[in-house]
Image 1 (cartoon, rainbow, N blue to C red):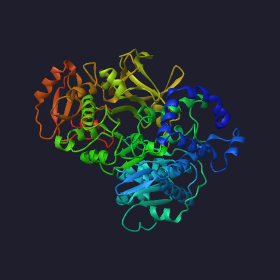
Image 2 (cartoon, one colour; image 1 turned 135 degrees about the horizontal axis):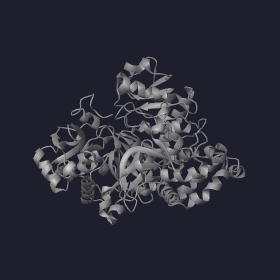
Image 3 (cartoon, helix red, strand yellow; image 1 turned 30 degrees about the horizontal axis):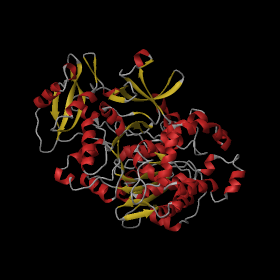
Image 4 (cartoon, rainbow, N blue to C red; image 1 turned 120 degrees about the horizontal axis):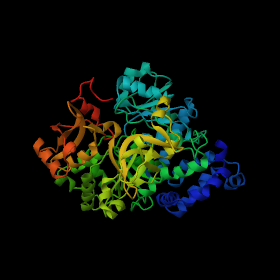
Amino acid sequence: MQAEKTFMGLMRALPPFMRMEETKGLGRTFKQQWGGGGNTFKIVVKIFTGGQGLLKNLIDLGKVKVGKIVPNWTLALWDILEDREAAVDGDTRLDYGELGVRALKLANALQGLGVKPKDRVATMIYNSVAFLEILNATSLIGAPMPFVNWHLRGEELRKTINLRKPRVFIFDADLLQEILEIKDGLEGIEHFVVLGGGGPPPRGMLSYEELLERAPAVRPDVNFIASLNPYTGGTTGIPKSSNLYDSLSYALSDLAEAPRETFENFLPYSSKAFSYFYWFGGDRICDPISRNIRTLIVTPVYHAGTAAGWAPCFMLGATGVFVRKFDAEEFLRLIEAERINWVFVAPTILQRVLALPDEVKKKYWLGSMRSVICAAAPCPPQVKRDINQLFQERGAPGPVFCEYYGSSETAIVTVLLPEDYEEEPRRINSVGKARCGDLGIFIEEEGRWAAPNEIGKVMGRTASTLALRYPGSEDKLHESIRTIDGVEWYDDGLLGYLDEDGFLYLTSRLKEMIITGGVNVYPLEIEGVILRHPAVFDAAVVSMPHPDLGEVPVACVQLHEGREASADDILAFCSEEGLHGYLLPAMVEFLPELPRHIDGKIIKRELEKLYWKDEERKG
């Protein structure tokens, strides 16, 4: 398989690859974000020369493997875009030249600690510029970088880290106590590196800054891989680790492991995987001063979805503004102050912004914004409309709300754009159409693909799923990979349907579907109605036991601060909006706040505990 990735193998796959809209769009995106044709030419030349001279590479081109050329990508960006602002982190501002120096120092320091290709360098850090430094350094030396959730504690944290058995573990100084409590139970870690802090690290641990100070800023022994190695959300147990570093690097790296597909067939999926840069406006977005994407990174960097926010810094020369802790007003202030035009958010962020007093929302000019990219949990359609209204009232030239459906395993699959729902307003209820992979709805009971508007299992096929493995949990793969008609698909456990134009509408997670009296009830349908009630801030529909019907829906509701509504009010509203029979909640219960995972997903198992005894609950 690796032999196919010689330059000549690439040439065989290139003609159809270059004709794809996604590839053409990515080409325009790189040209736009790199600063036009002049910079693009310089960067491409530097990628192919690698400091060895263009003529030598052209003469030897038939022998040169792609993985030996691509590492020059980041080196070229740091060189050609040297003076462009790369990252903002509080009072710290780094340009690409400075970022490159620090990343090179860290890469050499890690190799000095004995890190070899495919050794893991795990991180457990808050949002900061250090994330970009570590990501770039580990990518250059081919070391996967597991992102550990800094909310985890105790045994759950120990098991999560041990899934990957990292050789080096870099963590924020504020998390020192949590690490010390489990340190003796961690396997394989040779070096603990403390980021930040006001004094020296504990005995036996290393200081991040001291490591950088002692290391040279020279090109290390390069073995490139895009090192991102996220975990799944882990809302129902110990998170699994997914190998995105292989799937997103395979077409570019000789170090990445091969997918379950030929190189020629896999290459188009690689273009689709990165095409979200183009779909979300990368070929058009242009800050009037820095001439690039300026992205606000407000969701945790360990969450896979946040890659939609920071990846433009890694590949496109964007400016990343890191926020350690979300605050709704600060979110708006930074958009104005930093001229933000691109941001990834979870729906709860938008809900909290919209819940700000009008006098606060009117304080800030938001005209720089072009793409508010939402995912991680279902976003109520009214929130989508209201966020567009807010940004347009505060200066944005048009609708800004974008959305995608994806997961840690699939990466991005569908994309919803403003032009989609401007052309057909009902599409705002969808999560877009398959633009970054393939999608189908499968009727499990009948063994067939669904017709338009027919609910079934959501099946995806992307670059990520074709190479998916769960390192440390290899036995879990069979639970999600399906072969249908000789083709491999990923089953995300979701139910939904495609309309006549291919737009995906999600109705429920399979394990959350409520079967009441033999009738399938989809919680998202009920939640969507309740969330339109003006007094409701958030809502979740879960099941509760019923002596005759087996189970029935119960609505858990969080009201807007200062607003009032009764259960009868909510039920009457549901009836007026068209819910009837089994779709009407059997009970409405008001809670001060709904339990949410950090990625925005409501933890429904926590809610179901209120209604089911342990021995009764569904699995």
